[in-house]
Length: 444
Image (cartoon, rainbow, N blue to C red; front, side, top):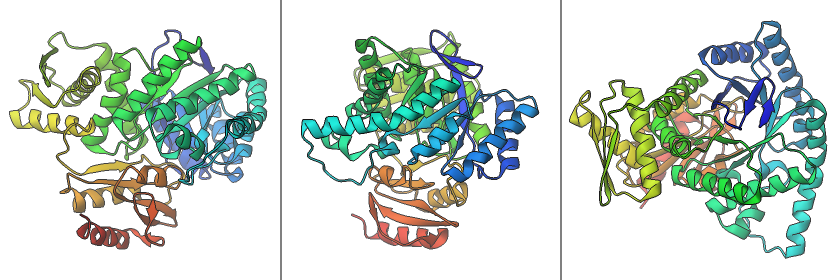
């Protein structure tokens, strides 16, 4: 079991629900206010981005103010690129999240041909850089999350294992070795992707590797850049639900391009519906077609239930089609839900695939409005994937999975990408979308 302040993960503890603020971390009052709304909605861990050393005093002030007002919910510092920031935060908050893809190594989309000695030297350099952070965590009782993101796997990993679920699992396993090297076990692991299938396969592979290794650490699970609205919820339920149905997952985060309180509400519904399934739920398989029957009257619970079970059935034995039967909804409504689930699992694409991040304090443009504009203009392309990303942390990496997209560039502007290729200078949103429309017109 891992201790995060007054929260325990693992060893049969209930699933913990978390979310992340999207305010400017340096705006202490706004971040405190949003944190309180999240906690009151049921959030049990609050994550806050700390991009640079400038935000370190702010997160200390945020914690002090929350504690002074009687909020004891543990805080998590989300750190990318800068190990010094992680070291500083580890002495302040209850948990620090780092991304192995950009903590020491980097992703420049380059093919590396390393010898075994060079590869081992790279791993040792990573361990040496992690040692101060681990020692600070030990001293202060701080937990650590190693958060592997598909969009930011380092070149060293991708060069050896490909851009695959195995590469994601191996990135986590390398950090298990590092933590064990320094006898540190207050650590949580996660593997995230905007691709539901890749995320579930990689997480299950890591879970199997940990069992084989003899030590199973708690897992944080979620589908990153899931989007918004029904599509974002269905994607999240498909990925998270599959793992929960297989007994995998100790804490979850639903990633929606919406206010973080909305993530918490849906996460609670999803956990509840999977733990208390209706007696009327039946799954019928006819070769490659799956039929799910249920009389769940609540639309959101029905959405979560159907998506989780359909995705889990597809993981166990591939399906090609899905039929949903629920007397509380029309045939058209059930068919629309089935189509969205098939899309989420990438079984049958019937509309544009939108990959959009939930945003955080690193996002410096109105991503929710931008996503709405993108969906309004580009929904009629079922053969395309379009990304709407908040910043450069995972943006260019996830652009490699999308055909086109925009990535936040600061000061209310975005950059247009084609896969991982940058195609524009920073542009205002509407101008960037005009450029995206021109590119799509020429796309074959």
